[in-house]
Length: 426
Length: 91
Image (cartoon, rainbow over all chains, first blue to last red; front, side, top):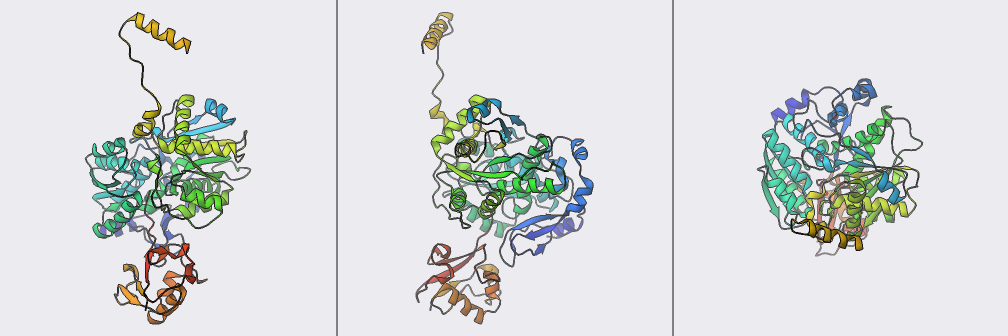
């Protein structure tokens, strides 16, 4: 605790305090995530006047191509020490996919190739673990549907931090192996993610570790903004008309919206005709936020037993559901809930048109974008960014049965000739 | 009399009691009765307009009152209410 207080006092610069999103009470920059008074979530507050003096397009462009080129808008008081290379993934102009969807200006923000663990979680973990070190933690932990587990384990290993990871028992093998390899203590819980999460709230209370998505959540969540900052810079300092974002807790969508607001506020982007429409994507088997949006309700009705191949999005009781639904509504966006079949189709479509192999969650996002185009919510000549947040090699079980097997032949030209003749007939 | 379970974070106001008894035919009436015995409790649970705060859940016999009749949800003598902060964890 003493170290925490010392670190908070040593702060300077643009990060002001933690502030309750509900009642506005302020708190020091410690490992706190819930308002003691009204139980609302805490969020990081910045001094935007100070940030405006420090940041310009030119200043940012001169910095190394990582997420830290926007460090004034990320919640650290000291330079980052974990995940210093994370970010600046490609923004791909998707001509071939655009033609298939009937869109003339489509982009893929490709965090499937994020360093080091192939998902956007590397961004939030870089912030959370750097903050954990600032606050003097030696052990970090997380509740995860897989990608967060991979990233916390890898980055903790590189930082020399002890690491506990809590996951539901039925995750994909790639996500389990991709955590174990880093030497983390992995605890598999017989239950849904929501049950894992509830248990972790109790563990976090008792063990006082740096729990990245519980006690460090206000800092952790801010890391997602870098995905949105990069989109705007890579578009040539402008904002797209639409962005389509996968939703699990709803935090990523909310923070991408915040990144757009902040860049407009700081004058870093050309003033758009109207702010981007935020669209949310969920799987039909677990779509509490999309349902609330479709029904125009404020209330998010939790899903008790999620059933979808998109396990990384299978959160039945989304922590930021309320804020995500509100952000969607205020931006004029919409949400779509797509079937497992649409998810698999979209994964193949993205791979076959753009050469990008995404995980099931990426299939959800692209399938949702397709749906929004078909419903006329996204116009054919409007700019659209589809956020691809994870890698297909981690969810091979889901797609394997739909791809068939390669043809096996002997090492003889005659056999190949026979094969190709047969191919041509088909 | 219905029983109300108090979360750790509010037990300072109930002098450490985990469970208290309160009178009332609805959840709202019970909260009013609690306020009489434990002043300051209601403002932690309800906002200025009297509505349940967004990040506080009340369960009537394990059912979220938001999916019943909210503060107007009827309460029987043998019922158990739980006040549970909706802790924002998750991905």
